[in-house]
Image (cartoon, rainbow, N blue to C red; front, side, top):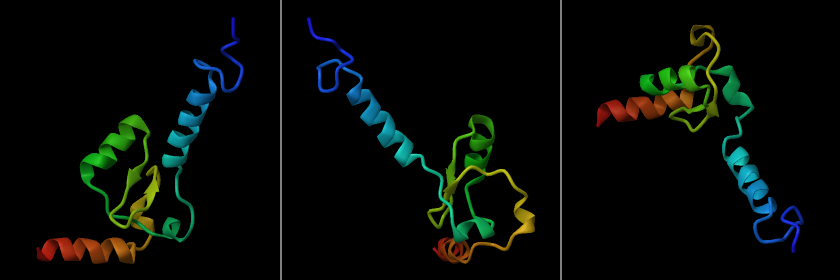
Length: 89
């Protein structure tokens, strides 16, 4: 009988490990210059994040878990430009 914990064995955990690694890569929180700005996100997404703790994605593409006072930071210029374009439509 084969050992299911042996890598490459059908039914082994290596497939689950790869799938988990891929999910974690997709959920990775961004770092960088975006952290210096307040971003535009749909209100319902902010509420959902507060309840679930899951990250949100801003109009500019920044993905993070909100947790700071947005009033203390300037508005992200990319988010603002996208938002202004949406208002004109």
